[in-house]
Length: 170
Length: 264
Image (cartoon, rainbow over all chains, first blue to last red; front, side, top):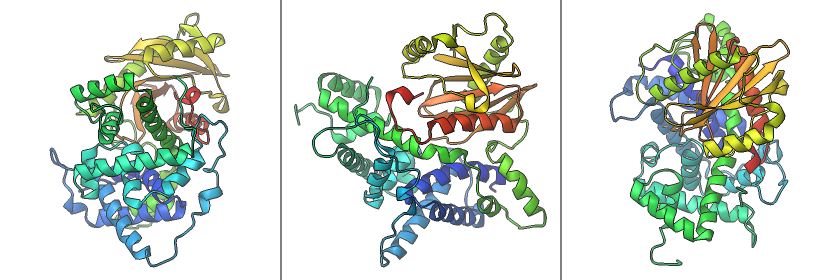
């Protein structure tokens, strides 16, 4: 049995991931809402147990599966251009040695979906490789290779042609 | 490939994510000490992570939309509309049952760290916030020096987030022990002389993205993880006020590009 307050406590994290994944705030919240409704409908299937998947991981698994289903259904439709692309998230670079957040968001959009998911679950949600493997239903080795490819692509996308703009000043 | 000993791309990533064992970790570190190009790659990966969090962490403190709160309702009752109204005020106090659950509550695993950490924060707050003449080690008029000093001691660049938007001026800061590591405390004061302290130390959050609310007597604390820090905001304030102050901290961060001067 899942308590309502437990469920509520995971909503901010689910929303953050969904927004990063989809960019469009309404679609992101739609995904979270679907996830919550499905979780409640199947709440009896989840039990906390030692070594088992925690509630958070279980919720992310549900949301991941919903996202995959929806993405599959959308493949026949023209790609949606996120309305937020020129919104408050897209900020111009102020200094060449810093990451422009808008550019990063756009670069993440251009990643293949499977790489984007891994990059966000690890880099944004701070999940362990093991947890990500469980959420996505793939081997840890696949998590690692997708992550390596995804991060490398992001780095190249942000680096432009010649000068690496990501340099951090100590 | 510069040498046959170069760690694989997968190992570089596992290094960034803290997924390597101590030996492999040390091996990558040695390699990075010798290979500036690879060290830059690692720094870039870290910067991407920080930028990601700067982009999307503000969502964590947004009020939860009513329809999502409603989705957690098993049965939609007449009380539901009213529940939704107060939910907006409560959504951030999400952990472990809202309202006055105390430090004595039994906990396990990483919760134990969180409770111990918050207890330290509350004790430090009580000890120093009542001080008239020596509330801080370094006063706000030496803010730059304080930031440099505390950055060195904590091992990561930090600076006090400005809270003037919430009506608080910086009093100063000090170095304190957390359980097994150095912690820093920044103290703020409002026009009414009420003091607010932000206590934090380097700590991996394991992806915990929630606010956790504690109270002990009349002292309230809000605990959360952000960017590799554990933070506790402590004071004698109402819950919603503490949250507003935490939001102000987030607001300062939102919309900024990630840079070394902004990584507290």
